Length: 321
Image 1 (cartoon, rainbow, N blue to C red):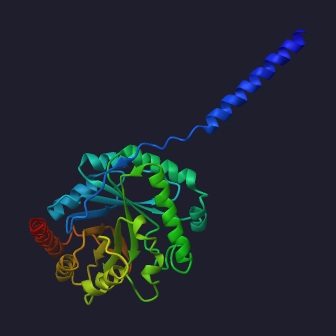
Image 2 (cartoon, rainbow, N blue to C red):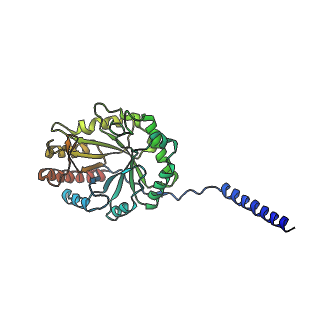
Image 3 (cartoon, one colour):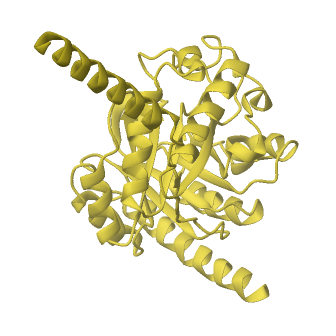
């Protein structure tokens, strides 16, 4: 009798547990609360910088601001695949009134697997951290994909596969309520041997801004061949705002006149602004120079003149609205 009673009780407990579990599984999943923090696409209003030592610190950015006579409002850094969102650095940047700009690069990851959802756990965790941050963040994924030098780029991954992965990443963030992201689709300047930029386009609903990376390498370089031709290609398929998302001017390329040419070109082509690559790449080649401005008096003067002109133009554009 006791055995039958114990068996009956065990049976009832099991049935109850199954019923509770089934009920829990049948409950609709609650979407996280959505966080919105859009950045305004204001022409000529963004000055960004990449600096060694930022992250983890902010002092290099302060030094750049002193040189430029204007505090940057974007601070960029590169994040390897599977690295979490750098919350402590983002908090520090925000405390200075600056927006973090992260390029998430899928090195050592399969782009097709990203598109298929194999890394969704990582992406959801990253998105949750960005949502919890609650402030504006600019994020790019797999930058310079139309060039050949990265494993996710031209000649390594089909453009359609990359575009599918981009859409999947953006969708995951939106599903997690991380609408505080400005999505920057970042291409390299069109050069001989690179792929046609339109092939990687994921569609307007998945992109906030277009980023273009480009450098003045030689004295003969001008805004048109560094950025202008690529901007014209982009304008054939989208009117999205354009940010010069990574740029620098080499010391042997006629810095004074070319820095002024850069700022004049930004005004002519009506871009959002620029992000200066303020790093020393130790002159490995013409493509890896010392791009820093702080130790070059003429370059510093030109940059300050360009900033002043841009501020006036930005104010005039705002007043014309």
